[in-house]
Image (cartoon, rainbow, N blue to C red; front, top):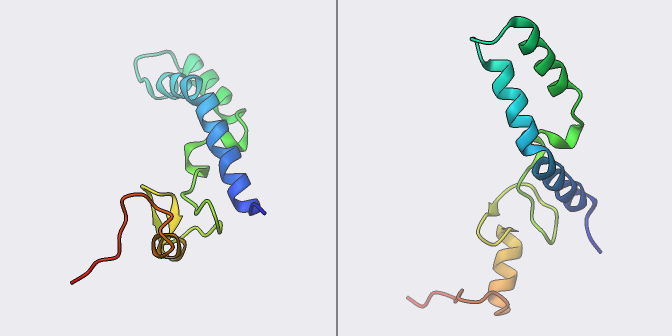
Length: 100
């Protein structure tokens, strides 16, 4: 069963990806000091009309198994504990237990 936090994070990532180009264009217009104030104001209004999942700050690295938001190993997308359990079970390619 998939954790609701993971589903929410997936939705946020899809929304950010879908609106990234237009959002960056409006942001560039809003920050451009050489443009007229009215144009900059309209760009700022358009930025405010975007939904919740169009902002890149809503994306958070989460474990794809447990939904945990802390201690994420980014290369695998797993939390420390989930990574350890999968590595010990031999389910991660190229990851082996160290032998000192």
